Image 1 (cartoon, rainbow, N blue to C red):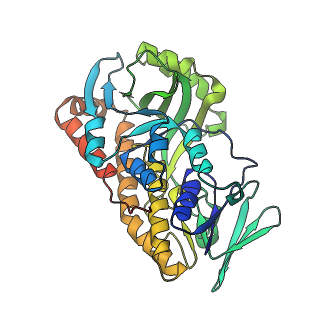
Image 2: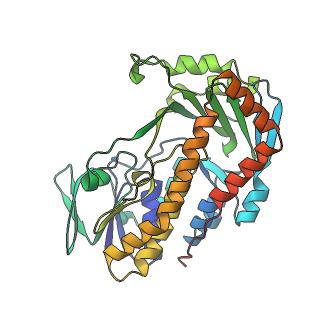
Length: 386
């Protein structure tokens, strides 16, 4: 059996590694001319570390980045509002939770494959299937033939469009800025979170030596006549840096503009249909979600393991894909809904709601609730592909 995977990001490469470990041939087709360093940081929580352990990559991923031991929620003046012991939750869930650079994770997965398994400069423009197999068509006029096709090609998936037509994404109506900067003078292994009206900031120290990963989400302007392309994002970051604790504001201002990514936050309400016949989807192509709990990449890695195990024990490709979808659908829907709901809460900007959020976070109930959510997100039984 040969599985054709469209997309050479984290989900696509993880799927190829998982399938190889399950004894199934996989080929990856990436539209970029080369797989190079892109993106910023990424959080790989206990559930994804457990999945990578089942791929034989547990020791390697632990050597990348920094373990998250605690989340400290700060006021705008840098005062501690509440704190979460992440290490204790991770131990309960059987693996550490890590923050690392996305490119380092991608390279680790790429190194686990043979060079002839990954094909670049292959933009998929269509998928055809019949009772005998699938055919991918590429923009350069070439084709690839196999038994199964998997779309791992992101939120605007060409594979998904070939199955279900163009489907509208849901806008969360806030931007997410992501960057890499010199690590500020903060305690290692402690994630910092600051909530302001309509703004949330997260800082992950030492994702790389002497480098921190940060993200900042802010609500979109209400002026509907202002196009995204016309908005001065750098001016906004300079202005908001003055509202943050001094060392964190200086970190944002000191980040090189070319190392800052800006994206509108999009997701898709949970969908019952991920595939048809010999074609299915994983990761953002199947279930894009808000970045609230840093579970996007984690869900894609989980998908990869369950996909490989489902195909390994299936009698035919179609039944294997439907089993995979059935095993993943509720799990992905739960995390998508949690991410959307709490993402909106973290973006509250009305004075009364912000005051309530601050009081809730400072009370014993706030940290208890966040621990409850993290345990729900990080506990998931995964098959061992050894």
